[in-house]
Amino acid sequence: MADMEKENKKIFEENYEEKIPYNRKSVDRIKRAILCMGAVLIALPIYIGLYTMVKLNNLNDRVNDMEEKVVIELNTSLMNPTGDQLKDKLSENSLLLDSGVNGDIVKTEVAEKTYLGSSMENTNVKNGKTVYLTFDDGPSEHTAELLDVLKEYDVKATFFVVCNPDKSTWPMYKRIVDEGHTLAMHSYSHKYEEIYASEEAFIEDVNKIRDFLYEQTGVECDFYRFPGGSSNSMTKSYVKDLIEYLDGQGITYFDWNSLSEDAVNLSLSPEELNANIMGYVRANAGNSTVLMHDIDACENTLTALPALIETLRREGYTLRPIDKNTVPVQHISYNKE
Image 1 (cartoon, rainbow, N blue to C red):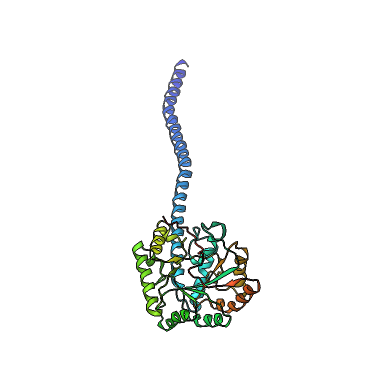
Image 2 (image 1 turned 60 degrees about the vertical axis):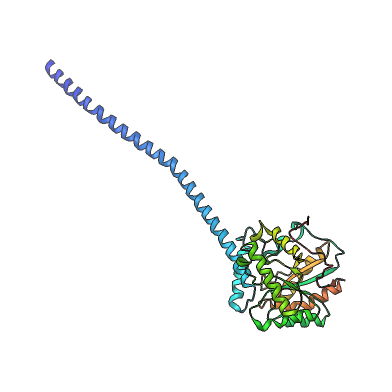
């Protein structure tokens, strides 16, 4: 009996010794599994966070690139737009801008409204009862009719023109001058990526449009409007150098403090365009320089003009063309040394 007990005890001890390392190995494996799972649970949110940040940065870069392309493409197309396809394109671009894609909005003629009022560096105040009607980007298929309306109402305006490649519009440059309006420069090509490629490119473009207009009219133009205004995003870092060049050439630049938004939204009715203008004019402390567009797509600007003139006169405003005595509205101030 004693021998049997000894034998059973020996067997138990042998089995116990065999199980101990087996159990330790299992525990070690479980520990390693738990540690690995913990590491994964800690690392996974960090990885997801970093991945999300990279994706958001990439998306932001893409949005910024798209913004710049939209702005450049839209302003280039405004030079001589025609047809339903272009109207659809302008509407799409306006929706993009309105929905906030162009977060840095400047700065171009599709976003002039941002630079009005208190945000302007230099709003000149005079008596507040003079209004300067200005038309950008012409001549177009509507220029002759615009001039007819102005002649009918005995109103003089200012035309900031480009070189329209359609030579059938070229007689309009001379007619603008002959009928007592102010002919002014708005660049030769109206292609932002070319005009603003460098200071040298800007100077070349200014000289080209000035020489071209002299050939067409015999008039040396002394007034200029930057495509996109002086506050455009593409010349932010060196715009004062460009202004200094213009000043050295005896050229005064003009921005605006009132607008119809005709090139922002082509679906605006003549009544809506005029309501926009009058809202600015009535709110301005000083004289008003009104931005409109003389382009093929802005037919409602032409339709709205008679009622605009009548309303302005009825409310006691005097309509004048820009001349050497006009105090310029300028988004970017420039002080001569």
